[in-house]
Image 1: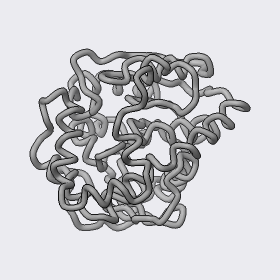
Image 2: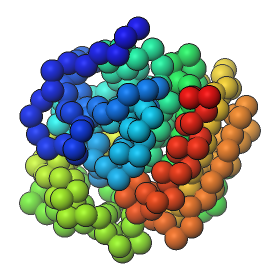
Image 3: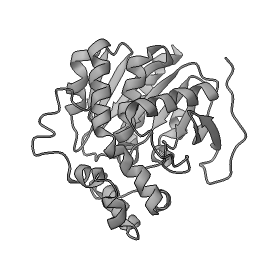
Length: 294
């Protein structure tokens, strides 16, 4: 099927990157597209937008068609009332690929983007050529006990209470986003224009409600992952990349159920790997994804 792209939308994008609004799974997805070659789908997490990938997109686009959406409810994508569970997000991703004329893609997911990427590869391996998962955990799967030994991160519970976090944080969104960006880069921070884009994307009660809906979907995600791994193995070539704080927990979760798994731990790197250590991440991605061109 030939590659397709709808008319570009207005808004800021990196040089050579076009922004589009694509109808998929009942919502309109804001997506950045650049490059030619085998498709690579990049799924961000919290508190990010597609611009999480800004420092690795140019390198990937030399040999790939890079597709970087804002996830459901985030950035400029439709602020849907529901559908923030991993299975629905996986369907969003699959239908986005279809709308863009891509029968399959390498899929890269970090943080909240990892569970839907995982479910898509597990349930629909024909649509996922290669899978990269970073700095996340996969619900109830064994292997992450050390990571959760002191309990889940404090914000998991705060975000999970319906209506609470958005009520407390409205008017202080930028300061809250700044905390995550500093923590996720071990204090080094991110470029000002990207910080401002993230802060703007998460400003307002409705924007926050959508963001925290990802955490409120955690029980549904756990059930979906448990059910899917009970009847499927992960057969696509997979790479797990850890940093601080998740480390090797994700790799340990994947190891028992993955046929072809490579693990990497990025040293001196915070949770937001694509912005904190793009110099380390890009070579890992280009080497692993390069098999598509062989």
